[in-house]
Image (tube, rainbow over all chains, first blue to last red; front, side, top):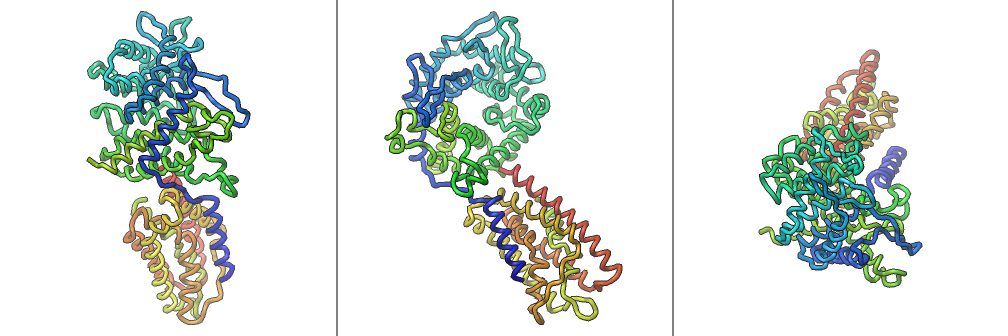
Length: 385
Length: 184
């Protein structure tokens, strides 16, 4: 009997420590989330150069700013700032985003058919998709239609990049004037979401139908065609589905949304198990890269908006639980003013999320966007009306 | 997990033919009826309790039901593998009289680790009623096998059937793990 009970207790302990450690969800309220959002915006704004570029990355251990830069991340941060302004009315976010937008506008190239943003000699589909998404969110939040012509022109570029089966070329080859026959991991979803937002801005022009074609490609063929063994947990696809016109939300597209919710949920549950110390560090490693956690939280936050649909309604309580839990531990993981006070460059630490001593602009971008979704949820609970 | 699969999973976890081979017996190679009755009632009571308190229990352990299903599936896979390679459990020295229903009938023959974790996982997903129904079906099957003498071809047949159920438990465990991974 003693042997059996010993095996039971030891086995239970091994399972507890190794397989199901506690999923820690610190309590969080709207004030804390708002504060984290403000701090992240300040990190982005404080690190902007006079030309409108953001700080790409910062290694606090070496007190070194990364010299890298690229278009998708620039456009992504700009988009996130516009999302912030749209939800919170933050003037700082709008001002920083407009400066970021101005930087991009200096690199626009125009052909007979379209306009697109080129950076460092590369015309990246995803960067243009995110830039267009940001412009659409800006237009909706401010009512300012000054970029309407440009939005349609970038939309036409995305259609040029889209193949008849819904797949999307990752780049446009300027010298031959054609899409390059290559895919980029997230460009497909970024382009599709931009087209959906364009459809919302200019209904009846067919942008949504084009986006739906790419959703179907992402839901069916993409992973096999693009050489992945498992489905890509694509938060941009989640945004695309959740912003799609209701009449385009078919059963198969909602099924895809359901699958995506599962991937995001698993990722976030796993993340909640990470404490980064003791035996947990050996078994679960360090708390994950903020951009990775943020994308999963962003994706699940996007799906929350359509989780009232009967096909997704059973997921809604869990989706909300993951959103609140993630907001709780990400607020806690953000560098506070007090923690940054003694740093070499407090302005590049305060408000940021680091992974093993390094932070990058998309860390702030994705966590910021995920916190916006969580804030909407928390506030809707306070004031259901 | 569907209700049908839940019942199959409980039957595979209790594994009545294999459990039957490890029950204490009288001189006619049959289990003591009183011990069987006590063991069955205790086992169903424990499953009911675990299913009933599964949500607060997991809350206290800070584990989401979806993640717990992964752990439960892993336990089921390991237990299924163990039962497949060891189809005849060791006969444990029994407590005297009706207490044999507690040891070894209720534990470890019926309330094995895989049954305990399954009760918790099922409690949060399928509810108490279905958990009890599934456990009762498995215990009822063991009760039916109790009238079969543990000898000769009957014993060999139970060992073989136990192996089949062990494979079924592995399959159910894999299903539980996938379910836990894919859920939100």
